[in-house]
Every structure is written in C-alpha cells, then in structure tokens.
Length: 182
Image (cartoon, rainbow, N blue to C red; front, side, top):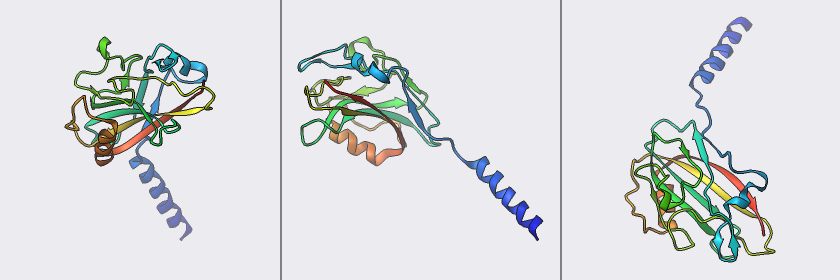
C-alpha cells in the first residue's frame, strides 16, 4: 500500500512540474542604486536626462496578444498619484524596450506601440521629480500581458482611460519598483 501511495505522489509531483508555467517577470539593467537619478525629469524644478529605462520581460502567459507598460507614482501629493509613462499596443513578439524608448522623437519604441499622454501633459516618458523634502517616492513600472492585440485607443487618451482598458484586458502583470527622493 505504501508503495502505491508513493507512486501516486511521485506522479502528481512530476505532472504538476510538467504543467507549471514560469513566472511572468520584468527586469531592468538601468534601475537600482542611484541609477534612478539619470531618469529624472527635466522641468518642474528637476534637471535630469528624462531617459526611460531599459526594460525586459519574460514568461508571458499563453494567449498574450500584446503588452502595455506604465510607470506610476502613488506617493505624488495630488490625491490621485502621478502617471509618468503609458505605452500600449506593444506587439506580442516584443520582450524588451531599449533605454530611452520613451523619447518620442527618437522613434525607439516598437513599431505600432502607442505612447499616450502622461500627467505631465505630454506624450512619452516623464521621469521622476518628487517635491524636495517629500521623502522617497515609489515609481512602479508594470508590464501587462494583454488578451487583445490593440486597446482601440489613440495617443491623446488620458492614463485613467488606459488603466480601465488595461484592467479589462490583462492576463498577467509584472512590476518593479524604483525609489527616488530629492
């Protein structure tokens, strides 16, 4: 009897491992330590390079048809946080954004991707610029694996509307958090 139980347990362990999907993850070579300073916004009292970080993701779930990326600061003293970057309609064949892809004029984002308006009032990446003395702010960068190829939105759409559509189309998401203060 014990031998039969062991075989069933072994079978369940092997079959579970065979069907387990790896975790959807997001990483960046550019973030960590003081690296966030190079991303600082240029304006609003800040004088950084305003360069979006390199991002890489892997193990998207089966059925992923496109991706979206956001960068959000929940600690901004606005009552609603602050959206620094909103990119969507990234083709499912893409798994990396190069550094500075958020600079619209350089055309480094994947073909077909849409970078919409941020809370700075402009399109593309807007780096960190927390108020001086306000302490560390979290900059949550999230990649969304979506079940649609296109969100059906244009580049002038506000972050809240993009967020609603992301919520409705998300299969999985992965985030990294960078911290910065002035």
